[in-house]
Amino acid sequence: MVLQLNYQTTLNEIINRHIAIGVEVEKHRISPDQTLSLRPFPENLSAELRPYVKREFCTSQLEFALPHSTDPELNVKLIGAVIKGTAQQLAPEEQIWHYSCPPQIPCPLAEVPISQVPEESNEYRRQSVLKHDVRRLLNNGTHINFSFSQEAIAYLMRELHFATRDDLYLQIAQYFMINRWLLTYLFGATPFAGQDYFDQHHLCGPVRSIRSSSLGFPNETRGDYRSVRHYIAAIDQAVANGELLQPREYYESVRLKSGNSKDPNRILKYGITHLELRTFDLNPLTISAVTPEQIRFIQLLALYFAYQPHLSGSQIQQLLAVAAEMNEQVALEAPTQQCAYATQGLTLLTELADFVERQQLEATFSEVLDQFRDCFIDADQTLAAQVLAQFDTY
Image 1 (cartoon, rainbow, N blue to C red):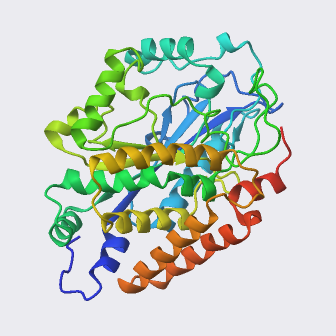
Image 2 (spheres, rainbow, N blue to C red; image 1 turned 120 degrees about the vertical axis):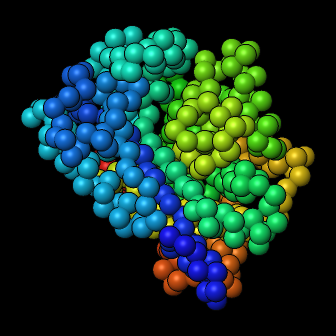
Image 3 (cartoon, rainbow, N blue to C red; image 1 turned 180 degrees about the vertical axis):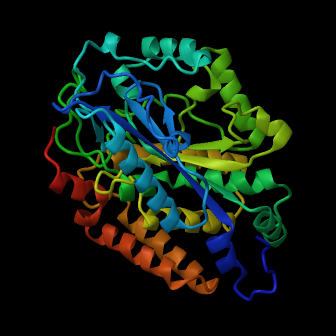
């Protein structure tokens, strides 16, 4: 779709037609007693579902990967239809688990069935369960992949003086990393976990996001986002010194991606094609695990972050160190507690609202911001608080 540069509101066209979103949702299959299913991966799904239902680390896990679309409603509608259709075709005694933290595990941890397909991933998975607590590896989430069209990239590079496409994507990744605490506050949805999730560490009460905290998915390696080469070198070094088994084990909140490859070195040859945001808990209040409002918010943030000041390497290092501490604090706050950074959150949302007005974006984006602004005024409106109110601790 060609970008009409003679539009007065060029950014309105970009945000509605030139930011493609691809969503990946991971969910477990469970048995009638609400425990992790030990049955093999379902091989008999119908032909219309099979392209969108992938194998994951554990045989109980299903990954729903949908085509990229610029339409948030279409994204969510497709995801919901595929998940619902899959649920209807599972074995009669199986259901889909809609929560990020894993259900109770009905076997010794060493006997949790790990996927044997594809065969080339077997050794990596075997080493992963030796290195990490398998219960942490069983955390599921929603990954949002986004990319600009070539026309939008050309416009933004010229408008904002980015030398390359990689520079544009890198800056957006930097700002998403710096502000990921905001996404944890708004979209955290794991206030509790099953009784067998912990051995010795027990939370004093519900929190916003176990999965997004140090108690969630294993994520000990911190990335270096000062430049694309720093990003790649940090991952390569972590593999070389044994900190990471393979580049695919780099589980930071934002990944720079080139095609479908998990090897960041591909970026050096082909460039960044999209960013993968991995910071989202499943939303258990909707079968799709994500809402159109959440996707619109990501589209808006991506465009807004492109317009922010360029950061120096030293600034980025300092801001990322603070951001990691902020995210941990927010993730472990009580769901109904006012966020420690509510003032910063409201300020950012106000700046986003000003950006929407200044760039003449659609009223839909103002409505989304109003909804999320209310979450900072009243923590009971956050997703974590809603989950806590509607779900019993399992």
